[in-house]
Length: 157
Image (cartoon, rainbow, N blue to C red; front, side, top):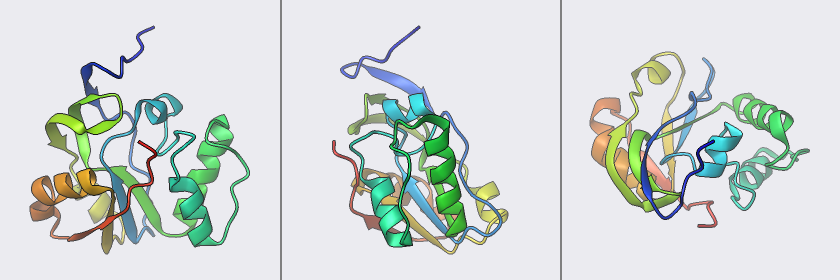
């Protein structure tokens, strides 16, 4: 089994699909899933990332399972965002990155947003952090025709 060395840059392909349905109105974009999130198979699953507590608080709900709660935690989080019209994905389809350090990203390739935008009701796009915002505005905004707002990062990194 290969484990990632956080000090070496490696080419990372985005490992999972976007979370959305036909009723999604808001798209929240990160840059690229962290190694912990890639291992868990879902977005923002590092135990110290504040994304899920923030989303739950904004929705007026509580989370029953911790980020390391396996498939129950993933199902709970997927259901939470979809119930509130929120879609999740990342700006990049692939890049060279050292661990979870957005500042180390080289050779970024953006995701194609055409399918998600055509099959949902996305009206607003928010980026979680400066790197996601910068990559989106530089690589994606011309094709999506939707401006983004930069939210504070919820990462502990």
